[in-house]
Amino acid sequence: MTTRVELPPVEQLSYGQYNGLACVWCGTNLTTGAVSAGIARGQMGAHILDTEVYACPEHADGPAPAGDTP
Image (cartoon, rainbow, N blue to C red; front, side, top):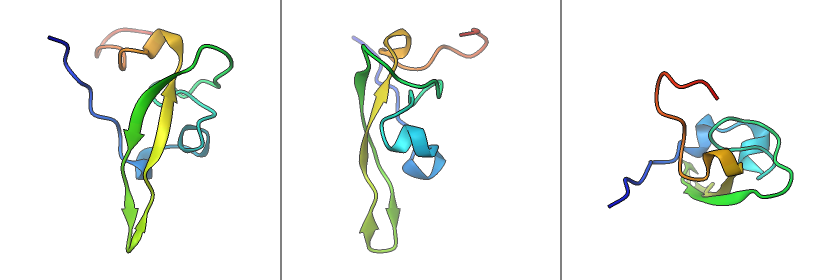
């Protein structure tokens, strides 16, 4: 059984991460091979800010464990 990693809320994402231009986990610019990491959720008042976020191939299974260097 795989452990599902919870995505950060949209309020914590950079412009690039929110718009699918950067990896949701490490923040590097995405080129080819990006994979969907899921939907980051967020809300501002009555406005739903949910967006699909992407990860680089190195972080396709989630963020690196604490203490590991990318």
